[in-house]
Length: 446
Ligand SMILES: *[C@@H]1O[C@H](CO)[C@@H](O)[C@H](O)[C@H]1NC(C)=O
Ligand SMILES: *[C@@H]1O[C@H](CO)[C@@H](O)[C@H](O)[C@H]1NC(C)=O
Ligand SMILES: *[C@@H]1O[C@H](CO)[C@@H](O)[C@H](O)[C@H]1NC(C)=O
Ligand SMILES: *[C@@H]1O[C@H](CO)[C@@H](O)[C@H](O)[C@H]1NC(C)=O
Image 1 (cartoon, rainbow, N blue to C red):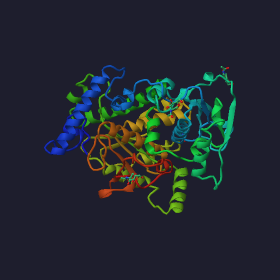
Image 2 (image 1 turned 120 degrees about the vertical axis):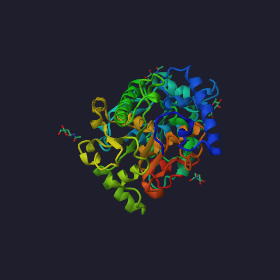
Image 3 (image 1 turned 45 degrees about the vertical axis):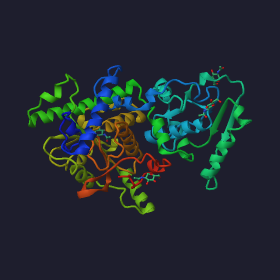
């Protein structure tokens, strides 16, 4: 795969323009690309980044319509907990439940910290401290809707709904319960409040594309996305410096007068910390799949086989804090791959200011904007990044990136592909449930 940074269309796909399919593909992309720039000039963004590709999505063309979700009926859910991506899934599940009931979801609390057991240390954080509230409603208009507690009229009171639990509480019974409460008299209540388990643990009734539709509407607040911008530009700065030492840099980097030259980088979500290793070994035993855990060496080797070594390339390692002092993850990479984690990058101050949830959101952004992403298919964090990258690819008109060299490929290092490369990875958007993504899978549709 050619990692050179220029924007030549042939390079966009890493293939030769002489091939007919490639020509067509390049043409389509060319058209889409300039459409994006055209639309882009009316927006407030700068730089040709992932964000701008939002404009391909039909959602921004949706007109305001009144026949969407009812604005006078609400659903309330318990505080959303655990990892960033478990929280995103739980949030989306709450939204889709509200949609099924044709109700506005009362903006739930997320959790800023990651204590699994100690409920009182979960630090509730309001959804709108992390994601843009108005933007969410405008992007998801007609599909799902968020409301505020101040929207309540408090006239008809609240109906408490206890979801069942245990083995006998099947997905069918759960769905039946939701259908029942859509009828009167329960539906008369202004608020239906679901009590008990966190939505991540509810039964799933929706296809991947419905979740994806909700995730698309989650846009980080400026304060956090600016932090991610800082990290990404630091990575690209270092990349530029490294390249200028080995080659005559120039013309194509600053041709656009951009302050952020597009020097490609690879992001690897490297799960090798002790807790994960214990967890994944157990998982391997339980599931009988021996492709869940990857050692440091295996990850380095597989990532190394993706790219050539002509141009030095920064590899951003998204690792647990407990690995920041572990120099062994920085050594042993193939020549030309230069590994950095947040400490070596000198951006740990940016992270230190924030609680767990925000740190994780920044790392998520850095990985999802990377030119190449490599993760573990049994990680929710990696899976949601690949889902987002898959959606962006689809918006560019590429529905199957498995066989062609695309500009923003994703790989799973825990599954071997051809010639010991990591396996190419794309989300199956027609999956009927989110099961594979939320619990991990070695079937990664490529
Ligand atoms: C929700 O209810 C409103 C008003 O009854 C209706 O117009 C709309 O089509 C319903 N929306 C959905 C998604 O069922
Ligand atoms: C309804 O109750 C909620 C929560 O107690 C409160 O925040 C809100 O202001 C009330 N709304 C009205 C219109 O009284
Ligand atoms: C890493 O090492 C430094 C200095 O030895 C120490 O202050 C810091 O707490 C360590 N960080 C972690 C995450 O172990
Ligand atoms: C995607 O999921 C659908 C529905 O579960 C399935 O029929 C199809 O074979 C899957 N495609 C791939 C490439 O795995």
